[in-house]
Image (tube, rainbow, N blue to C red):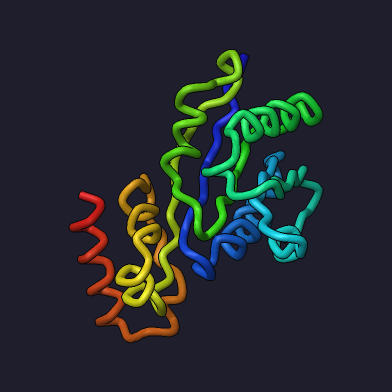
Length: 175
C-alpha cells in the first residue's frame, strides 16, 4: 500500500499560506489533493480564500489544531483518505498562530497503519512584515525554526537588500 505524503504549511498570519496553496492546486491539476484547513471562529475565511478545483477540503473549526485534541486531526485525515481513496497528497494549512511542532508530532507518532507519512513542514515567511513578526511574536520564530522548507513571500514589496538580509538571517536560524 502506498503511503500518502502530508505537507504541513505553516507561517505567521498574512504570510501567504492560502495563496501558496492556491498556486499548488493550480499547477498540479493531475494530482488529487486533500486539504485540511484550520478555521478559527465563526467566519470561514480560509475556505473562502482557497479556491478548490475538485479537491476535498476539510475544515477543522474546533480551535487551533496544535491545541485541540490531536486525535481530531488524525481522525480528520483518516476520514479524508477513506472518503476519497484517490487522494495522492494531503496539505494541512495550520493557523497563523499555530505551533507546528505538536501538529507534526501527531503524524510522526501516528501513521494510520502506514497509510500516511509526514513529508515536510513548509514555513511561509512574509518579507514585508518579517522584522515586526519575528521581534513581537515568538510563534513566528518557532514556525521558522521547525521548518524543513522556508519560502519567502512578498519579496516584490521590499528592497532586494532586505530580502537578502532576511535570507541570511533565516539561514542562521534554520541551520
